[in-house]
Amino acid sequence: MASASALESLVGHVIVFDLTSRFVILGTYRGTDGPYYIVENADVHDLRDATTTRDLYVIDAKRHGVNCNRQRVLVRCDGVVGISRLEDVIE
Image 1 (spheres, rainbow, N blue to C red):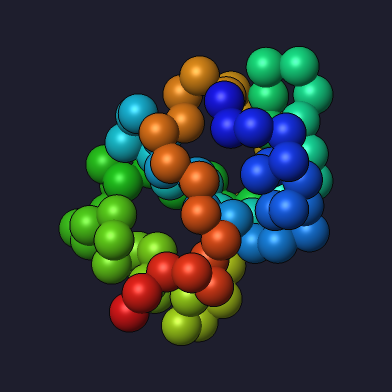
Image 2 (cartoon, one colour):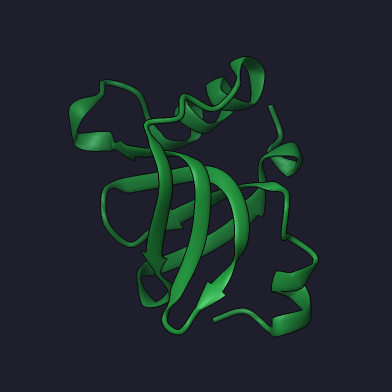
């Protein structure tokens, strides 16, 4: 899990969560609750259901906006391999 100060600086930003599984989650980061990251207005995307790569999916979200399919989701911290602001994604 990232340091508390690093995570606090992300609150309110649209974040990309790269998971150990074939999922990628994008949404507004609100904080943590025990072993979970709290994400609102989230797009929980299963890459097994798509013909695109993780990188291309995230770039598309940066260009066109996040396709929200969850109002709120809790993401297990131990399943996350990367966290970045969507605005930091390089096209």
